[in-house]
Length: 229
Image (cartoon, rainbow, N blue to C red; front, side):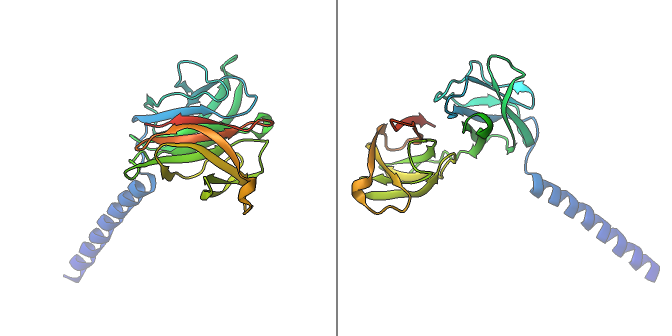
């Protein structure tokens, strides 16, 4: 009888171990390889040649993406952990400009931003939350790549700061702004002198829409607006 109880306990713990192992594996990954993901490509690398993008060796775009150009979301069956992403110069498909690895979850939306230039090039992979902004608002994030601006900048709507410390080369989180916004202000991070704010025109940021705004330029600082919906 005692022997039977010991065996029962062993089998119970073994079963629990298998269950926990399976659960842990599922929670750790949460990613199924080979299912569809939606990917947008943005070439924000100043002076870079036009780019083709490969995920795990498969080209996903139909036309090369030049500097400041973007694609629509491309649906591709390349989900999985540690997907190898390569930006390659379109003049030669084997000429890798920059590479990165990222987890791509099935049925999610991602933007691949190529930033920097030359040996300082980088790939920023963002999972895009395309949930609608609040009523009357637009949802916007910023990509600061301007060598004509400070390393870190604060961003304003008029004299109201909407985002602090956007660092060159990074992609900020989304923030909500009033729909209809047609200009943003940029100044050195931490500068409280509102007279130093440089006004930059943007296209009308419509309420209910989601955007990325690239701040670029060395001599003349400008913006390029990318729509996500």
